Image 1 (cartoon, rainbow, N blue to C red):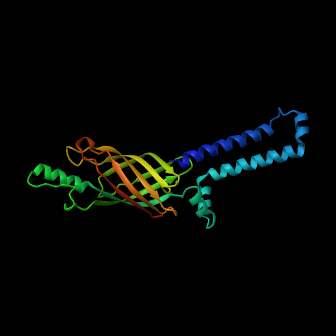
Image 2 (image 1 turned 120 degrees about the horizontal axis):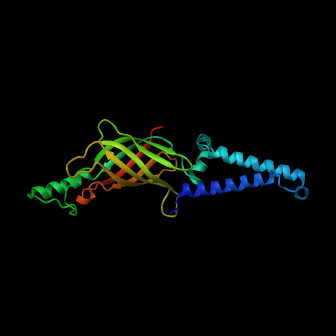
Image 3 (image 1 turned 30 degrees about the vertical axis):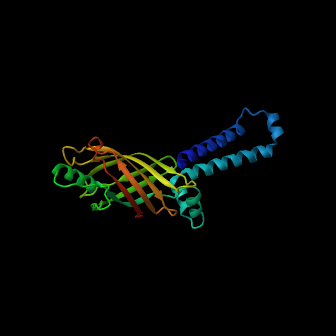
Length: 239
């Protein structure tokens, strides 16, 4: 499993430092006249100019508005999305489907003691997953990615903080994926057995055009009571 962005950032920075060092070396006043004579004054100046141009190009390409513009070009954009990674920057809408109704049905059956609720039985009628839609902002650059889930009036969410996001390159088994770890704080606990904040993770498949994210999430909310829910995420780009 390879992490695309951290690896590429290291290669990018190493190449940048190497070129920058070369340009300063060629421009150094300590370069002896006989060394310049061997190199040739014309080659010396040309090499220095080329090195500075390459450094400038690397610097400009590292700037987010520039690389995002490259990703938007009709011919170059799809190639970069496939060979590098899609541009995920922008506003999204995530639909969360939680297995909490199943957990609650098991808890109710256990506390009532009047009927059984066997989730492993093929004849058990499982309750539908609980769905909720929340706006999400994704901010992506060469150094980091942030996934910010925004609270709404109906949501219990107070704040969701990104702890880490890894962009995973495609391999022989899976396509490009986004691995997201977060900390969520709610406005108020659901009950005396609930917690105010908890950790969660998600692994989402990224579509080739970078407009859809789909996968599963899980968290450790009230895990010590066996109540930690999990579910699915479907994300669609809004802008």
